Image (cartoon, rainbow, N blue to C red; front, side, top):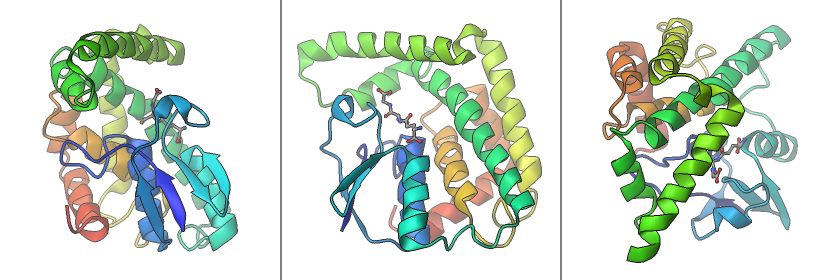
Length: 234
Ligand SMILES: N[C@@H](CCC(=O)N[C@@H](CS)C(=O)NCC(=O)O)C(=O)O
């Protein structure tokens, strides 16, 4: 059976990593059997990030490459009905979510001082006491470097939240009153969207991002629906 290597659930979410949550939701949506392993050391992961999978003896990292592989191996029940035009729009939206909005979420969790104590407590809870005083600082510095490398970290907090807020409004307008982002049927875009939006809406996060998302009724209802449909136990 396919093994999904990911972080443990936390903060009342299936996963605090939008990409792990994305892939697990994809597996559930596509009806692919899997087992979860949360013991993997992220530093030893094939690309130094989670999630990755092992299937039929092959280890594969990166949610997008993994989903390509799953489509080739198990069929493409979620996206095969999309026209090239619709698939292009879905890809553009996915990039907005994963390559831009995601980084504003990272900023709000790791850099915004209002959220850092909670982030530190949740992510580093399992470390022994002395290590726990050192490692989080180093990890935060690394995230700061990553944010600067991306470019998001070069903006002021106000600008970061302005960027994220625009993305949230764009997503709310695009979703409108449709049940799923591409219409009546769930597609791969929904797994990307749900992973990031549910994390932004997590009540443990204090930020203009969460405030905005919480006021976007269709986004809130969408996340509730996705949770009931794909994680009915949580
Ligand atoms: N492009 C990757 C992104 C995965 C990713 O960024 N994972 C983060 C958690 S959300 C991670 O493992 N970060 C650990 C690190 O950077 O050290 C994918 O789609 O799987």
